[in-house]
Length: 251
Image 1 (cartoon, helix red, strand yellow):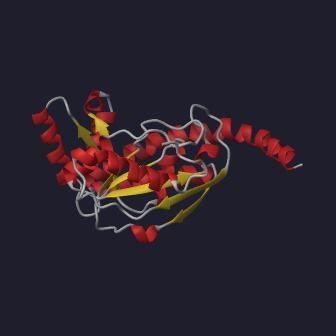
Image 2 (cartoon, one colour):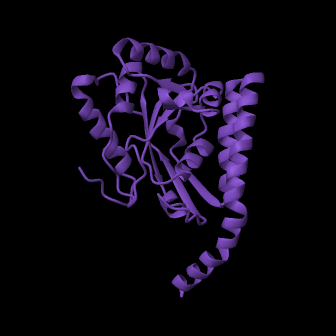
Image 3 (cartoon, helix red, strand yellow):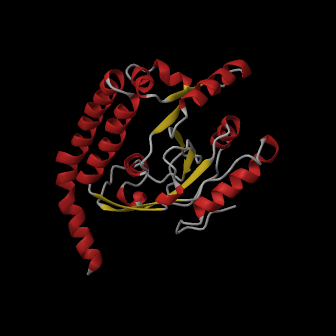
């Protein structure tokens, strides 16, 4: 009976999704993107990021709708900058983290993104960080520039799996986020997201209303870690994130 009712709701939702929600998300993403650039230029990057990140995410979540629960807010200090790491199940992870984490966040972008029309200019205006590791000197300049921006509670977000999980199981973590945390001397803030996979599975447009949860874990002090024991740090962070998933993380 419950399955039949869910199937009925699914088919009733489809006209709303195709005729309103998907066009609405595309249009408001453009609108909020332009507004974020304008506000960042005329007022401040923090205001631009809030409007183009938090408000944008909450509007899209509301119209989906996505019902959000957050635990562990006490583990975030608004005046501390973090390297934030999270598992990745869906595009809706971005809405969840942007909309409900409650701190100013930036994204690390590859240097090639600077050349994309609109994207490079807009990303610079709102303060996203371009990282160039083409050689050691340029990489150090990029890291020094990042360190200047990641202060007073401005943090950076990574999905260390590198791609969305199809099954919901936790994938292998790449080194990038952990290397940057060590290089910049910033604490890691592990986050687990659940439920977003059911709202929008990876590689599909099968959006459906649902409940999402974000668990904010205690931060990890990286002072005792370096290049020699970075795998220990990666495994420790992965265990923390995996501990709140309904799937057992593979070693």
